[in-house]
Image (tube, rainbow, N blue to C red; front, top):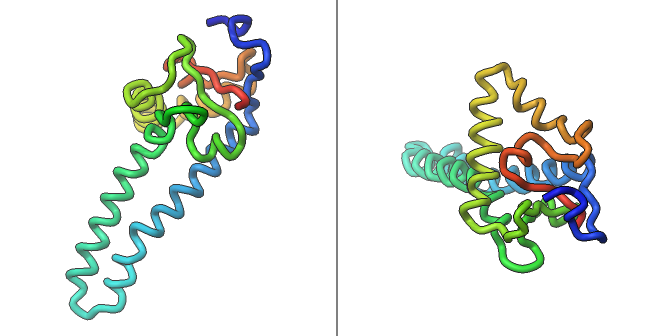
Amino acid sequence: MAPSALPLNTALAGWGSRVGATLLDAVVLLVLAVVLVAPGVVLTAVSEGGALGIILLIVGVLAFFVVSLLYASFFMQRDGEHNGQTLGKQWVGIRVVRVDGQPFGWGPALLRELAIKQLLFGVVGGFFLSIPTLLDWLWPLWDDENRALHDMVASTRVLRA
């Protein structure tokens, strides 16, 4: 879909709002990390044997790992007016839309957020001195449609909600 095919009242999200949403999402994940991991840390620190505390700590860390992998995909696939929004995007007032106009379901959300952003640009990009990751983050600054590289790969755009 060319930019002219977007609804007339739709404006592309700017780089600053995208960064703001990412930072807010990071704060949400930080709070979740504290909630999931702190009980194990406290129990390990105050108990002499510490076995139960260590088990609780391991479970908390594993739970946080799973939550952090699925966080964005879970919120992106919500029905209704918040489809295409993580909590950070919702609070900043932006949303991700698919070029074909279809709403996000689990499949497209997992593809964009987990496979493309986290694995391709995050993990694989890290093997190349994180240059692909940095380019992905900065690409909207000079792209005519404010699209990051992961938006191009996933066929998405980020709009003001």
